[in-house]
Length: 358
Image 1 (tube, one colour):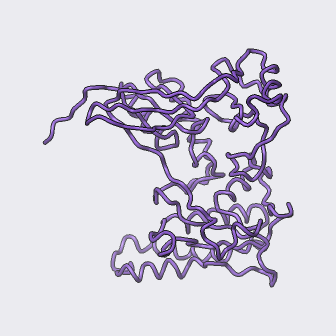
Image 2 (cartoon, helix red, strand yellow):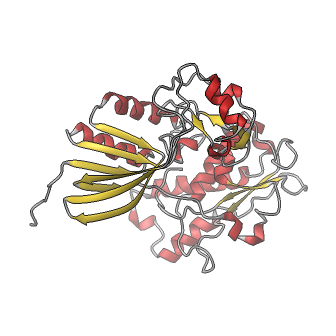
């Protein structure tokens, strides 16, 4: 057995999502010194932007609150946000890692009072809501953001809007002279927990994501359903702001396709079933177009659970199993009326980790 090498006890964790936070906390609670870097202004990753996660149907704040409390109480963890890894060199147990730190234009004195946000009038697309709405150019990423520090968008630095934000801060936390920094660290191990990214929906032309405003992705739908999202939890069509009651879910958009992604993400079906519950809660089963697919898939899932104790009842071949799954998850569920769907949500594959939470 190869002996372990540990010339440096510091561990670098890259990625501040659920996986990265968990890895950092587990290592820190074992007594290791941990540096946790995240490229966005706050921790949580994409999971924090979901409305609910399966199977408990809880809001991600449930898990985030616990992990953030552990993180704040542990002195072994050093957090660096708005930071990316640009180079890694060295050998096992002794790595030199170069980091690029983008300016936040707000220092540690910030108390998150919000005065800078009130002072500015300029708006920028809101990345937390995947650009479905706009936010002030001086902003807190979201209510549970950690660290609880505002961010000044670079677009207003050097403008009168930036000076308004600086003048409004009662504690002098706005620093418009911040510059990009490069930092080199010596660490003994690197944990890569950068998570996953959605496939670019613009590349799948037949469904018109880039042409029709009412065709959106499943992640954008999560933000619409969230009470903290751009519509206050109301399922509204982006095109005209009206309620979307006739809804079609397009399954496997881009997956198992030689022109896009050859693999199956494994979570699209379950993510859509979860999202049909949002529609039912909003409008009731009678007006929810995806309810037919939901009932069919639920029946199939119950049959497979009952069969788990008896291997003889499971479909034996891989082809049979795939056929069974496809047969109970309709590509586009039939609407309850003759009218075409007023909104279409995609459930397309993640391009990185096929076991991501749904």
